[in-house]
Image (tube, rainbow, N blue to C red; front, side, top):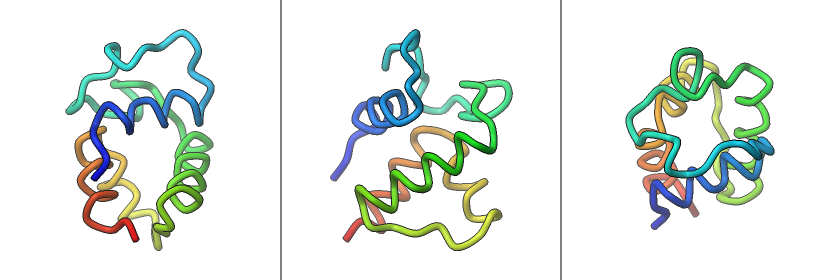
Length: 83
């Protein structure tokens, strides 16, 4: 099982967010736009990281919107689907 804090660390390291600490990211805050401010390129990088680290593929953009809604939704998705 992966924790929300571990997911935050992976997001920070994958996207090279040097000025952001795990404590700066709220578990339920949006990852895109108003929240952390990620964009579509960041989403692709996160999808690649999830595939490489957890062997999980996101099949479509609609699923990605739900999965990447927040740290909590991403954590739940990984914990439910990790191999």
